[in-house]
Image (cartoon, rainbow, N blue to C red; front, side, top):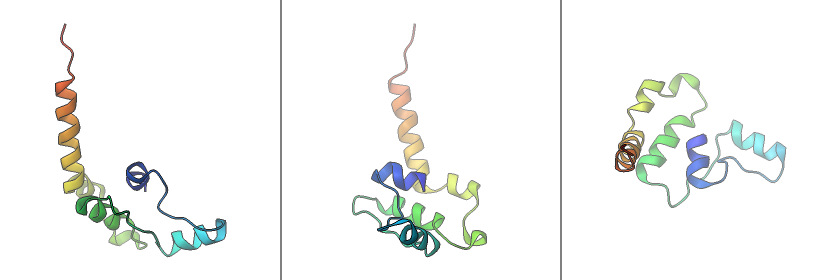
Length: 85
């Protein structure tokens, strides 16, 4: 859920009121923003599953292409910004 919110700027589950928000959460009813990449859409969709046993384990999520691509990008940026004394 945090990945969705950080990439979109809003939470995935909306509603007119608290009751409709809760219903959308229970039904896992959300919309994928157009600007989400296919990898991000796949990552989010794999997590937003109501049956816990059908969700991928953390180890698998950490190996997801969207995570791996962005970890490498972040590591490259850190390396470029590395300060030496």
